[in-house]
Amino acid sequence: MHPTEITAILNLPISQELLARDLLRMAYVAKDGTPRNIPIAFTWNGSEIVVCTAKNAPKLPSLRHNPAVALTIDTEVHPPKILLIRGRAELDVVDGIPEEYLQMNGTYEMTPEQRVEWETEVRSLYDGMVRIVITPTWVKLIDFETTLPTAVEELVQRQAERQRA
Image 1 (cartoon, helix red, strand yellow):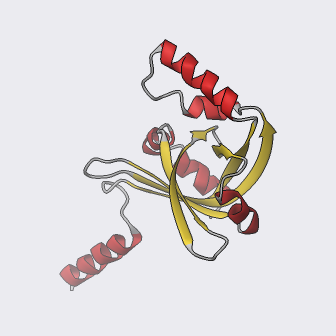
Image 2 (tube, rainbow, N blue to C red; image 1 turned 120 degrees about the vertical axis):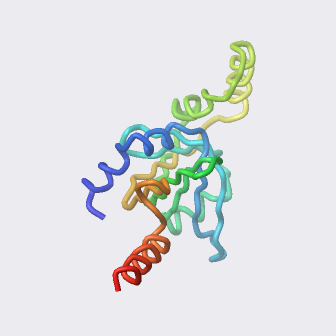
């Protein structure tokens, strides 16, 4: 997929709404060759998705071995809005707590006092983290109004052809 196509889809209002959500699901291949799919908090910086994790997270050896990932960000209402993203994970080990980690957890409802307490606990728990940075290489937005899953698009096209015949 060409980068300009990716940018055009990611800049659509529905995509921007989805990229402002708290959680995505990240699929990757584990070291034993079996698939994994995990919910994880994220932030979108305008060109990359950033997730942060503990330096001892089991997903890290897998991502070092095979950095291909597939992401899903969606809604829980009907019709669902779904943003599918594929990309390559780059791992960046950092000292301390990445600013993205603090940002991505900033949309949960917390009182100011709870926020201070949470951040103090985070800073005491982690001496560093790993930023997993994903640059999209393929995207698809499904909103069931202007775009559909590929299989449904094919069925609609076949139905239209039958009706014309």
